[in-house]
Length: 140
Image (cartoon, rainbow, N blue to C red; front, side, top):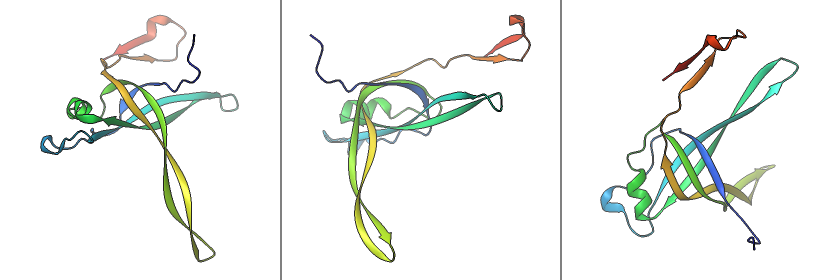
């Protein structure tokens, strides 16, 4: 029987900055590392007849000593696959309306990693616009 609920996230993208991990002597059972992963999607704009890309940034929380040690060497530009669970974290935030300060709840979403895999960097396929497939070039 299938599970009644499911909260699975699978992301594949590039790191936007070096991994944020505690130093070796600061790793405890409650320690965590943070990754910032970029994924790219987009849509075709019919009016302009062009592809309009969109980059989304995902905050990845890597809990525990194992992940802290694993991601420490990861650098901006690394190509990763991350599997985990989407969680919302609520924070109180001050809002000023007509000079008066109010407290408001603000949700921040993050993926709590269950598996991280470093992937080989994909070859980029460049199309020079001609209809022949011979005009495509694979770049490293």
